[in-house]
Length: 548
Image 1: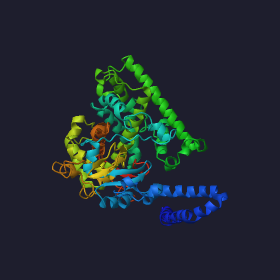
Image 2 (image 1 turned 90 degrees about the vertical axis):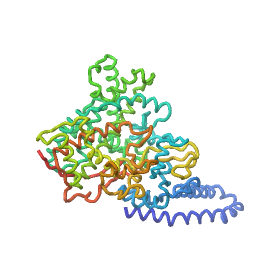
Image 3 (image 1 turned 45 degrees about the vertical axis):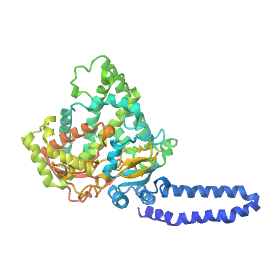
C-alpha cells in the first residue's frame, strides 16, 4: 500500500506538469521547426499525437467532464490507490467519500469502470430517482457485466430481471412475481438451521460465521430456488460446493476485472482460472438439465400435489407462464437460467454476509443480544430442544426485526446499486444532472451519512422502534435502501428477511455469542470489496456457547 500511494502521488505531481511542458514544446518550438524540416515531420508528429492523447486521457480520468464540473468529486488517484491495494471499505468511506460529502449536498462525482458517474447519498435525491417522483425517468444503464466470455459475464451477463429495462423487464417481473409473493418455506429454513447446528458443534464453539452461513444459504437457495441440494452443511468440500466457491471467488478477483484478456484469450495459460471456467460450465449445464426436467414434470402435472409454499422458485415461475394473469408472458430456458443465476448470487452471498454481521453485533453488544433472546424465548418458549418458528411467530419478533434492519443499515452487503441513466436534463436533490449521466445510489455512505443519521457508525436497533429515529426521518426522502425501493426493489427481499428471522431466532435460543479476545474485528468489521462492490470479510470468528 505505501508503494502504491507513492506511485499515485508521483503521477499526480510529476506527470501532469511534464506533459503540459511537452505539449508546449511541440506547439511553440518543434512544430514551426518541422514545417521547415519536412523529412522528420511524420514520425515526430506521431510521437506528438501519442503524447497529446496520453495527456487527454490523464485529464479525462483525473477530473470530471465539463458537464459535471459543478459537482464535488472524489480524487481519482486516491480512489485507485484503494482499488489497487484492496483497501478497507470503511477507510475508503472515511478518507475519500465523507470529505466529499462535507463539501456538497450529498451528490458527487467519481470515476468508475463505466467512466465518470454521479453518486447519491442524499435521501431526497434517492427518492426522486428510485420512486420517479417527478417527471423524469432513470432506467437501468445498458451496461454489460464485463467483456464477453469472462467468468462474470458468463454467469450474470444474460437476459435477467436485474439488468433488463422496458417491456422485457416487465415480462420477467410478471412471471417471477408470484414466486416471490407467497408464504416462504420457513420449515425448510428451520430444518437447514438444525443441520447448521451440527456443523457448529463439530467446530467446537469458535466459528467462522461467514463460512457457516455461506454453506447454510447455499443449501437454502439451491433447494428453495430450483430443488437442488448442494449439501454444503453436510460436506463443504463436495464437488458442487467446491466448484461453486471457485466461481464465486473467481468473479471478484481484481486481476481479471482490470485485465479481462487473462480471463478470455489467455485463460488457457492460467490453470486455476481455466478450472473456474470449467466449473461454471458444469454449473450452467446442471441448470439446463434441471430446467428441462422441471418443464417435463409440470407438463405431466407431477408437481400438482406439492403445497404451494413448498414449491421451489423455478417451478412457480414455469407455472406462472400458464396462469391467465401472466397474459401470455413466457421466458425462454436461457432467460430462466440467467434469472436463476442472479437469484442464486443475490440470495446466497448477501444473506450470508448480513447474518454474519448480525451475529457479530450481537456478540459485541451483549445487552442487545440478551434483549433479543428474551423476546424469542417469550414467543417460542425455553424448552431444551429445537423449536422451528412459524411465519406468524417471526412477525411477532419486533425487536429482532429492528436488529436485522440496523444490521442492513450499518453492514449492507452492497456498496452501491446498479447504475441508472438520466434520460434528460434534470435535478436530483436540487442538483443539476445533465442528460446521459450515469447515476447510482451509494448505499454504504447514505446509510452512514452523518447529515442523515445520528451517531451513524454505532449499532442502535432502537432507531427502528416506534417513534425512533428512522420513523422521524423526513417524509420526503429515502434514508434506508438496502433492497433499493420502488418498482425495481429487490424481488428477493422477503425471501431473505424470512430466512434471517428464522435463523437468528433459532440461534438465539440455542447459543450465546461472544467475540474472541484475539479478534481482528474488535472495533469494527474489517470489510473489503471496493473494486467489485460486493462487500466481504475474512476471518470473522465468533465464539458460540450452547445453552442446551
